[in-house]
Image (tube, rainbow, N blue to C red; front, side):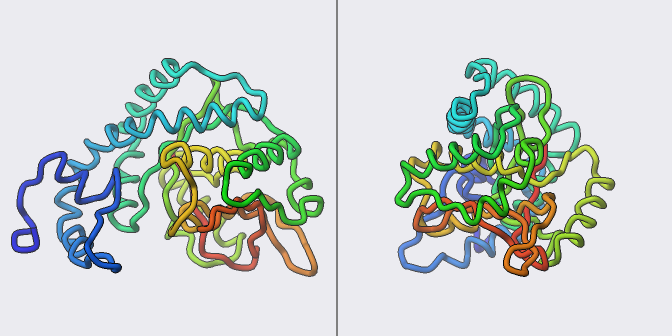
Length: 288
């Protein structure tokens, strides 16, 4: 490929090159720079084929997504859909995503920004802070470190169940795609600027259903990633999980204006913490 970047690639070649299932392992400590060079040269050429492959990539994540969903549904007292019902909903939703442009957007975000897509199934439940707190604490019991919650009385407990859970849809669950990193268009900016940018993105592309992940969706995302890999720790875990909940009203703590920020550190410690409302670059949005 380094000699002829225009070589026609099979489905398996594309899945390998773009590292959808697993990262390419080199022989040294550093990542082989040729991998990213080849992808940069081929990206636009391969885009249509990757869009066609994305349903298969997401379907391969379905089992872990269902397990993550079921864990949180049980923890929050929500109805648990059967796996058969889940897969039927997923098949229908992927058809909608193809028509609405979600699939192409996700692939472009991956090719241009490196954000791998993660299928997320969130229980359609309105859970209050105590319920979400219990779910987060339970998750930490099987991690290398227990869940840490920062100043919950001054921050997380100040929000309503609706604010913490996000907007439910019809049925037992809602499906979406979580990027593996930040949404570059939002930049390193204050909350109000990021919200204004998001509002414009939503107006420009209403079919994408872009929105800030809720705290409920963040905890479900933790469970989903762990169900897929068997553990949630190691290099890159912080970047893969950090969510700035910028749609929640900022609160003042010790003179600072802050919003909730959730993450799992590389060492495996789950944390419901804060993010500086005055400026942070790790904002991301869900689509679908």
